[in-house]
Length: 166
Image (cartoon, rainbow, N blue to C red; front, side, top):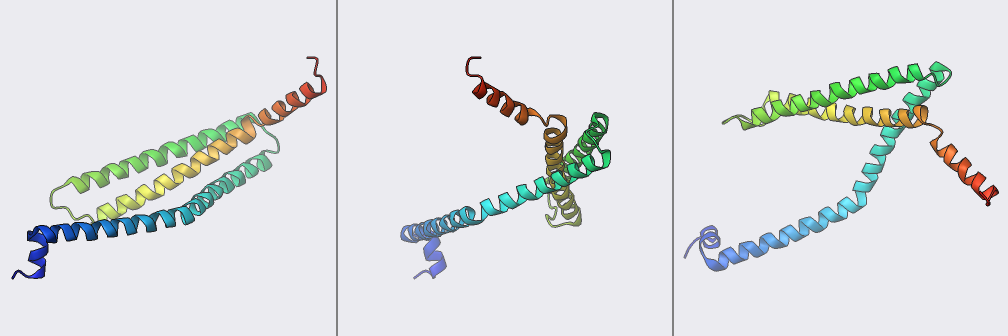
């Protein structure tokens, strides 16, 4: 008689049994993942978005407070600075990703080498800062550059309600 390990690998009933056990484990893991993703993923995503918006609103409050008015030249310089930071962080992240992929493609390279860990850390930081700068640019544009869009639309709707003939 074969040992249990050989029996599971080399006989048809053993292979069927291993497949059934694997399928049960896969279903259990998928059920657990869907439960956790429904419960916690939305909370984490909402917290992340609110954190980014809070940072962008704080930056825009300081911009408006320090300029004293919506001087378009100061706002344009601020947006250009943010675009400059976006370019630096975005391409820094891409460069670190390329270093990581190059080191991972080498034959016999250790995946947990110091170069890979440093490249992964730089990649995570750069992508986080890229998202943060994007939120700042979007909020700055919507608050300072084109702030009256909603107000003008509401005024037009109110005047249309007051004068139904036109």
